[in-house]
Length: 168
Image (cartoon, rainbow, N blue to C red; front, side, top):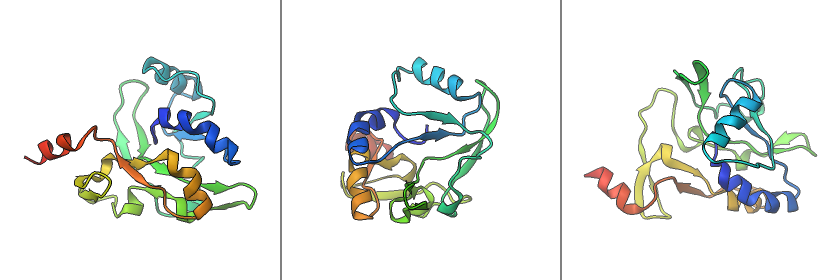
């Protein structure tokens, strides 16, 4: 999934209270119900927002520009597909336009389609982390949108010791 589903569910009431609706889109094939079943197998149940299967990438917000990172994924579960790496796109439905200041993906952090996955300094833990471990802090999303600024990021690493150990 493009974002940690559990953190989205924890924040959904705050998002909705701020007038923000949420849709999660994955390029995983098989249809919405198949994706839901795979999430349930991993203990993610009773989501209060839709998770949509979009293997043809028809739901991508094209106005976002060149922010998507794709990768071919050989998947035994339901077939090979073109995966979209994590991205956060904020669209103002009332105004009918993207909020570019809040857009996040690995590309907005400097990653290119043919680049090696580099490390980046994460000030929140005072250490370098692999760029691919960074994700938006969903609890910051409401303020990010109100302030028209990038959402804060965190690493998926459990602790700094894991990061430092990887560097040895």
